[in-house]
Figure 1 (cartoon, rainbow, N blue to C red):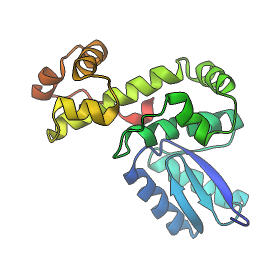
Figure 2 (cartoon, rainbow, N blue to C red):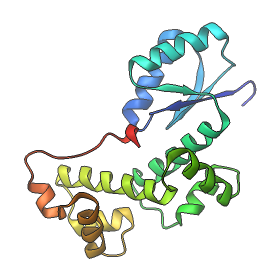
Figure 3 (cartoon, rainbow, N blue to C red):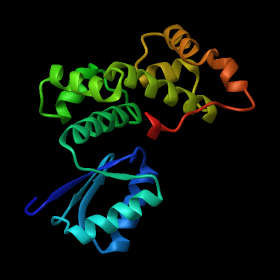
Amino acid sequence: MPGETIVHIKNVVCKRCIISVQNILDQLGIPFYEIKLGKAHLKSPLNNMQKLKLGKEFSKVGFKLIERREHKIINEIKSAILDDIYSDEFSSKKLSEIIIEKIPYEYGHITHLFTQHEGYTIQSFYNRIKIERVKELLEYDELSITNISDRLGYSTPAYLSSSFKKATGYSPSVYKNLKVKCRQSLDIF
């Protein structure tokens, strides 16, 4: 879109986060076209005062403007993964295909950059986010293990169960019955 500026935002990991960003932009009178996980498409570039005010308002709710190119790429990788895992339909695409569709760099470069800055691989991040999604779906108690397995692309319910137990120390059925759940905020990843 003409005159469009993309602002990358750390910790925008869900639909409520997108609404928060929208409210902040509206409050500051900053016009935008669209807000997605991890970024906002603004109608014009920010001046220094707007950038300062926006950064201040974002920090109040746990968001942060991202300005370095490497951090923008990492944020885009995380957003692509979150988009995939939290979509209503499972994508049968490989993780590399999901990322390459959204980020115009060679996958080898992206994986090296991600691992260098985050201290773990893209695959590890993907697996951790999937486990958090499984926890969430178990807590909702609306889907069976088989349905969760299908929805998140596990090859079998048994594989989901063994992956879940390896990551959490609990089988899905034991986790479901815990009085105190141990979900982690997605913005710590």
